[in-house]
Image (cartoon, rainbow, N blue to C red):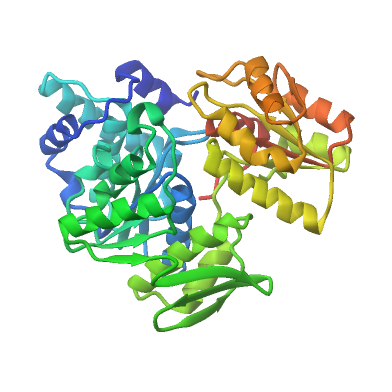
Amino acid sequence: MDPISERLRARHPQRIDLSLERMRALCSALGDPQQRLPPVIHVAGTNGKGSTVAFIRAIAEAAGLTVHAYTSPHLVRFNERIRLAGRLIEDEGLNAILDRVEAAIDAGDSQATVFESTTAAAFVAMSETPADLAVVEVGLGGVLDATNVIERPLLSVIAPVDLDHAEFLGTSLRGVAVEKAGILKAGARGLIARQPEEAMAAIEAAARAVHAPLTVMGVDFDAWAERGGMAFQDQSRFLDLPAPALPGPHQIANAGLAVAVALELDLPERAIAEGLESVRWPARMQRLAAGPYAEAARAADAEVWLDGGHNPHAGAALAETLAERQARAPRPTALIVGMLANKDAGGFFGALTASGATVFTVPFEGVAAEPEALAAVARGHGLGATACASATEALERALRLGAGRVVICGSLYLAGEVLGASRETWPD
């Protein structure tokens, strides 16, 4: 664990407790930094919101703007969550701001969760560093998420909505969409990804209630793969763009949503194209090129990929990506899967049944599902599955069985452990 994460774990409650009361009080004690941010693009959604943030940032920076970004969770170092004017926050500056946050908490004789404290720290840092734009990702839900103390975003963006975090958001798609739509604010345009009908109805109702105008994918604009690139069309223009650098058919939709944001910001087509080609976002179908996993795969003439998707919607995106790659270059495929115990493993594996992949289940640090129990779920969905003691053992077994394409997936926590061991450099 990195030093900042250790500090936060020792100082703050680890629980998730959705509420805005503590966050508002903490921000008030800090001088309400959320009211002094550069223009904010607030991004919610179940899947794809992190990728959408990465696309927006890459395009804006290609246009010459300086951009803050706040995302979660981190993979290797906590500092990944806070990017100031294009650079990851330094330990010295972050520790100094955390001192101020903790002093404000103590002075109020109150508590704050880790996410509330770090969100407040991010807002302080971003309010005190000049930039043209701040892109802020919701942590969980929307209505009661700590980031939702932002009252006047420039734009609100909702990536695809699906079921996840049922213990906090419930098991109704409509209910989850209502939570996500809580970031919509009066007068701030909402840009909405293509949604299931039930989710879209809830988002539209929430927008009407707060008088937020909407621009909706599939109605007001769309994006699709075309001739090895990407096409984008809205009510007034057609853009012939390069394919996004992030692999997978689902990234066309995420990129399309980001392009719609860029056009709302009046960014030039040149910057849009450059941003799509230059974007980087680790553990989203990332091919590993360094470290022990990549070296073992190369020795066996195989490729190894890393993906942090961890719910049924992400499983479907992974299945679509694998099918696309198999169509271009067929190779025996293996999945090395570790998941949190509270995730819908059945829905994840059900989406991957048609892939025919061999599954190896593994543990990781934290509240992970038992590998044998996870393997039983995979077998229940028609996939051959074996429990292993580690990702290293699983990779060895997969390569011995002749896998030519290995995907380590199922949890961003597992992805973080793999990246930490892989010596992959983080994109600055």
